[in-house]
Image (cartoon, rainbow, N blue to C red; front, side):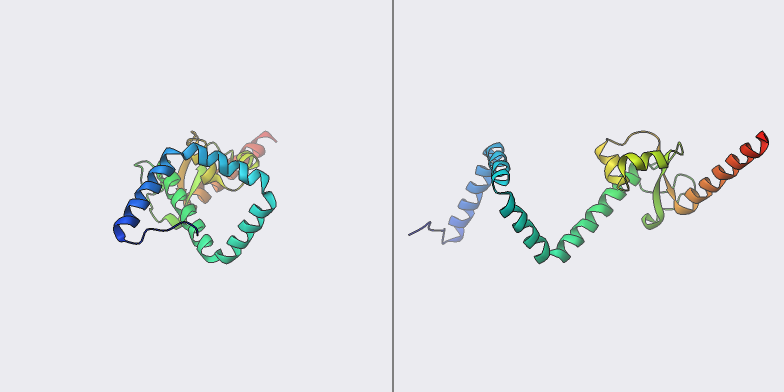
Length: 158
């Protein structure tokens, strides 16, 4: 005959609380079970994930975009002077033009390690030292000055 589901609102509320408590009490067991299931049902899990992603593509893209913006704001705020995302040189606060700058000018070497997902990498590695928040203009100006200094050093050797 199957499981009978609660019919009244009170029964539904009680059932909901019970399930919430059960999930909380058996969190580790459920995690291990899911992990084992995914290992033993790789093909079914992959097919389901592919189907789900196709069906919910727009929602997943929107969520992903929101999540990346949240992480970017968090990281930029950490590397700003007052905890709020702003350029440490000129003070601009438009998050669309703010970026992370490698204070030691070692961006090329760092990209070889972490790739292009610098905001996630910084967050995952507990915000290491050596970075600052700059707007694109200040970042570009810093790079122009660095290249000019390098050219002057090379010119003075000869």
